Image (cartoon, rainbow, N blue to C red; front, side, top):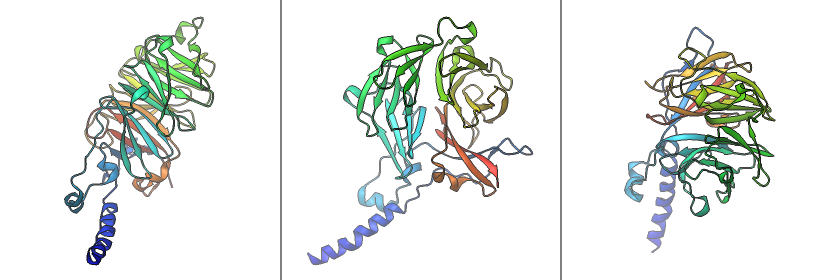
Amino acid sequence: MNQIIQRLKIVLPLLLLLSCSASKETTRVSELIIYPSPPEKPRIQYLTSFSKSTDITGEQSEFMASVIGEEDVRSLNKPYGISIYKGKIYICDTMLGGLIIVDLKNSTFENFLPKGMGQLKKPINCFVDNIGNLFVTDTEREQVVVFNESGNYITSFGEKEESKPIDVFADQNKIWMADLKNHCVNVYNKSDYTFINSIPAEDQDSLARLYSPTNLVVRNQKIYVSDFGDFNVKVYDIDGNYIRTVGSYGRNLGQFVRQKGVAVDKDENLYVVDAGFENVQIFNKDGQLLMFFGGPYNGPGDMWLPAKVIIDYDNLEYFRQYVHENYNLKYLIFVTNQYGPDKINIYGFIEEK
């Protein structure tokens, strides 16, 4: 018995060491991929991507496989919405019928498949607020489903307005929901999830009208709505008053053919995904085109039916290892791809040292 105990004292730490030594690096690329291309001043660097669990957890060694068996490798199927909070990335997978939650700190890749009242059917978009509550738009349930930071079901709403929720955003006091069925953005009280009003109001100018609102973001007291049916992004103030329209239909720079997700940085630059061009275009706060990045998929950095874009300032430490030594990383840009080998692309907005 003593001999067995002594052997276990040797083998168990060895197993732990081997399991921790597996590579946890996401996909690296040897060549520098920057936008715009030289001789223009680089603004964005493609950093890395991930598509499956082993991109995050690391490849299992042959020894560990022989000891504990082959691990189950999980893959992203058809990601759309994405949000990030405290080092955790929340990704809606429409084919999974749930979410994937990637914990960057602990290098985990887990399915989120709630049961009971919180069961999801076709989650499209998600948003995590500043206290960790998760809001998920489910087009089959035709509701927004809400969970707390621990993943426990809180409530659902939207059915009273007979809506078709496509996207959602929340701050401390209000919730905004893109309603495809009623061609508007519904606003709710965050304290009790009661309906407040719709944007735009019926008495606003025809320029304010929404045809097919599919994605939205709220930043600096402005509401940005991707109007898929009108081939543009409409901007409103926080009270829902129309300000301007960005973009139009066409195949020239600054125009759209299948615009989807939108994001806004701290300088009020607007990022717009176009699934037709398979890129992201960036506009300044006045709606003037600055640049674009991505392109139809031929390799790392390119996109394949992209859907959502988000900007993150809080988790730079997990991706600085991919930044070229000549640049400083200012913030991160995440883009979801519904097809192709690189489902989640991560880019960095960079400045020369």
